[in-house]
Image (cartoon, rainbow, N blue to C red; front, side, top):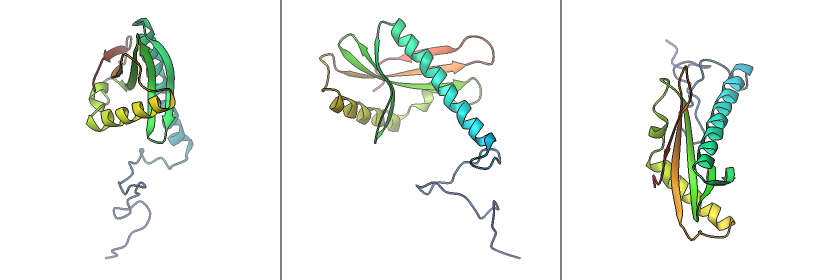
Length: 157
């Protein structure tokens, strides 16, 4: 029996730069129109959720200062002002029944990253405001039918 296999056989697992196995996207080759379409749909879904979240924050009386702010440590979805407090807002959007609840996706590692990102944002924008910094999470759940469900949790970290 031949013990070496090539291609997409059992012994040939593609790995990320960090050595973790790559997830396969339903046998669609990387760079294919199908794979690109799936990535585009995920981006559009995330953008739609962020638009709903920004609208929710504005309706709550907050002012949007920045969206999709990036630095070497990652990205902040929404930076807002709530009175004299700065709000760093993580937005998670999910289709109903396909994945875990959006809020469950924000774990301790993510909140720690959000703290670091808040520090970076403050370094570049003049330091902490008088009202301090708060980290909020907005979960957007898109049911198969009906209006999206938008949940806003203040002060998660």
